[in-house]
Image (tube, rainbow, N blue to C red; front, side, top):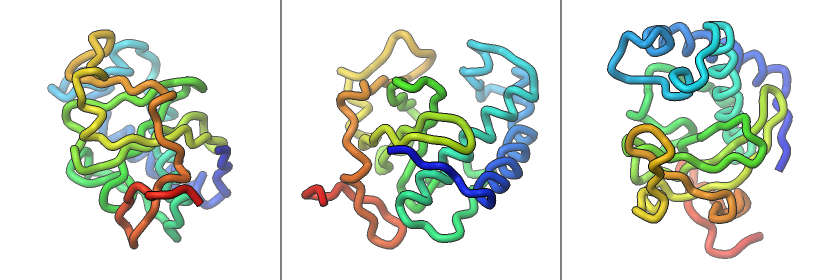
Length: 176
């Protein structure tokens, strides 16, 4: 499902993404115990690092827009203590058009993870999966760094199967 952010959400993505990149500068520089694995693997300038943060924030905005959150404000300084959207939605972003969902050991078990591809302002909602179910041994990946799980695209549930009750996501029992 293709979603294009409006000008306001693009502006919010840029502002929040730049703040996030500056906040994560120690990760970019490799001077913290919390690593940025993408940066370690692919390198790049700080400007490229900031673009990745902007695109990740844009992905969060897309999920919020699709699920009906009005006037969504992306957050900083929450890391894994709080969901990206609502109370239990973790947004995972990849540039790979056919990329898979990657869950790490520190992702919260009670959350759902929504996979988003693309770059600001154009994104695609690829599907979602329960984080707790993703941490099954059958998804464990030795190809990824750390405690990681790779969920193939074919295993993802369609975003149409997400139902919201205020700001909590559930699995819809029957498609619309």
